[in-house]
Image (cartoon, rainbow, N blue to C red):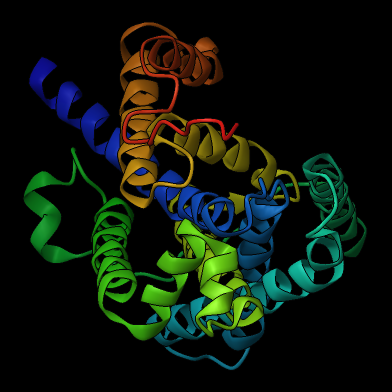
Length: 302
């Protein structure tokens, strides 16, 4: 029984870590290229979940297969969230690229609050039930006390997305342009890289990943409201800083460290301190490694 409980907590931690990783990648990619902490990124995650809820609700009225509904809903969420991410960048961040960083930071916080209130007014302040669209996987029957179908789907989807993103960043022409822009934006521009296009693609990828995370975790938990993006966004930001903001492998590692710490902390100590665990582990690690687990130490230019 004790061993089952341990593995349940481990699976729960990996599931949390996977969702944090999907969101944290958006934070760290945007910071790596634009040097901006996009505090509205959590709201993109929330908008993705609401888009899937609305699309699945409409398609359910036509009696479609639930699996097809889920696939169409997550595709719609990705497209809609990506459009929101790019629009956000064009309206709130692009005009401030040459302004002090504090101006862009305030703009990001303002957009976060605006999107929260927009969804609150357009939908409701209450929690809404998210439909169960996926069937139970029969091959998980023997271990269903440890891992559920939704948890399995979250882990597999996150692993596939991480591999595809790594291949894209390492080997594609656009990925190389993104790495060059991250290292030296001015030099990248001098060698002919379209900086505006690279930044837009970064927001598209980050927002799409957040939408996938929003739909998967909503399907797992079974309910959503307008505020889910705030807490998830803060935790994912903590994970990105924990791993080393600007580092893609660091964001993934930091997310899993955070997710597993929260899960074991709530399981063996108390769920009352769930949010405190995130910040305690962040403080402890930053004391010994200020640049994060995989972050690079940046020296100040004289």
